[in-house]
Length: 263
Image (cartoon, rainbow, N blue to C red; front, side, top):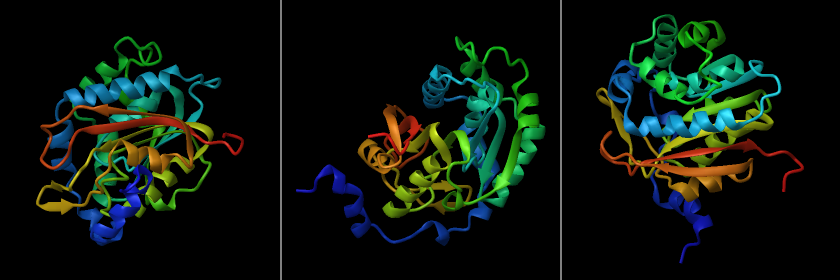
């Protein structure tokens, strides 16, 4: 019988060894991805927004507006960056694919109207967000698109971070999933806050006319990957079943980077 803490290791043995470097990420169809996922606010994203915005608002930021923030693998998505906006003087949109970096640059200048739906849900009942009357003007001044690979993140650089549907959606390899999740958390300073979202038990996905990989993970896999580098980790599931075929809902993890003194 396989123990829960052996699941990822066992998956490596039976999964095809197709890794992140085997895909042409510069050919990612950003417009198609946005239209399918974020052209309108979905119920699953509403729930993710509630979890993430409540988590960031609940923390004590002694130097509000001065945090350095990063959204790792930003892709064709602005709402993780918006969730950090009330607390950050700088938001790095860290992205490997050329197509996504181009899309982000364009969106910062002229965001699609649907992003207001996301922002309105984010501000509802949350005092940290309500003073910002023009979030997209603020984002255009504070956000910077940076080319980068998740595996090349430098440790100890940021006060807060988001990563939505990245670590499990860039490879079929369990070892690369674990490495990506840990590189993400390690990019934070000790006690830096993070929020990450994952597709649950994903079998891969299509964007435009291309297929992209996934590593099938569940709540235990996410917790196991984060445990060596994170503390105060909370795992929550989000119901979702009609976005596409080949997944079983979503997972949101929040927490802090572990300090050397943390047990």
